[in-house]
Image (cartoon, rainbow, N blue to C red; front, top):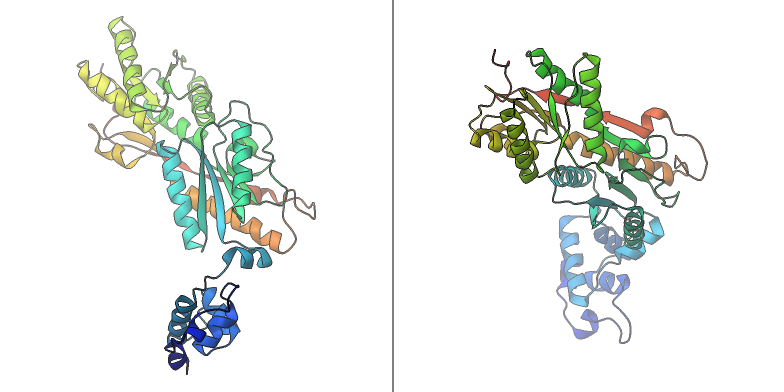
Length: 369
């Protein structure tokens, strides 16, 4: 019956009444099925026989009917989409984080709408939040709210939110790598090899991850009673790592003993390696180098780079899982924190820390005597 009806192409059957848009009933009439069956097909339900689904889809094309997903979502209160706000997506950490979030969201049946803000200031982030809400989202992920001093993220209390920034612990649900522990492992690895101290090429002063890694570097050296050398700063790029490397080479030529360097990310470490080798210094013979992030390229540098691994896949999965948990609590009328009931969320539900592990390769060795 559905196949015979779907093949009927008379004008009266393939066009909706003049002056109105094609309706669910028009499709049902042409396909020879109930409006409930058409609704199931339009929502992707698996409770429809393949031949019936084919007939309904053909009838939709014939009458020019397109399911109104926005209207259906407004009725149900679920849109099947998460918003993601990121600053400088071209950076390795941000791009890999977004990739991990998109993959995790897809596994859970969600799409992702991405906004890359030009500036990380509060006004830009709040404008991005408003823009995403107009596009109908179920929840929001903010990647690294890159302001030097964190302030309250002004978002509606009813909007589920997870932030990849440990500074918002206690205010919003957060996910992040254990950067302090990873930094300590890097410094202690170099000290354990016999290096007297460890120099540091840090990220931008306004970057929270750079601040955390710098703090961890200082704390690890002081915990072992070692001198904290002057800081060299980059901007996360290989070019800035190369410039930092030339500064360190000049200091070595001036007589300063520099045998170990911890770089705040792998890309700056790559530039640092090039500067050292071009100056005729051996890595790790003259200077040992450690990076941070464990980007895929780090294993193929010369020499392969010892680095601290950030598990971006695990962090993306954690961000999505925590957001889905909030969405479900909202659906049950129990959104926390800041939800209608006002109840407090358990601590383990509002913060998740992903381990950052040291990966030892060929760019570190004991110092020459």
